[in-house]
Image: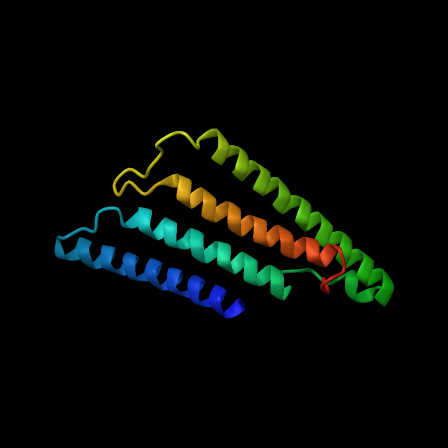
Length: 147
């Protein structure tokens, strides 16, 4: 599954870069790529969401070890579990906000300005990524995975 995440996120990142390169080249030769910013934003949403999922599962988020490295192993484990719980709480708040906005605007025909990309789909992608990140943090809180 991790390889699938890496491929999906990598492809989205390459597509974002390629779209931006084509937009810059197009501007210089007089053939602008209309809606390139909307495409780049959609691709970055996918790439960023996948990156959050992978980083959370791998435990590779940026962390400060000044205090934790000086604690005994049992206290260090407790502090890491509390940090995982606080992280889960933060992601839960983000997910609640994302679901609230999605539910509030679900019936609207909200689309991007030039390409008419449906924001509903982008919100679903964002909320699914947040849900997967939340589940990864909860696994660490419950001790099924080392924080």
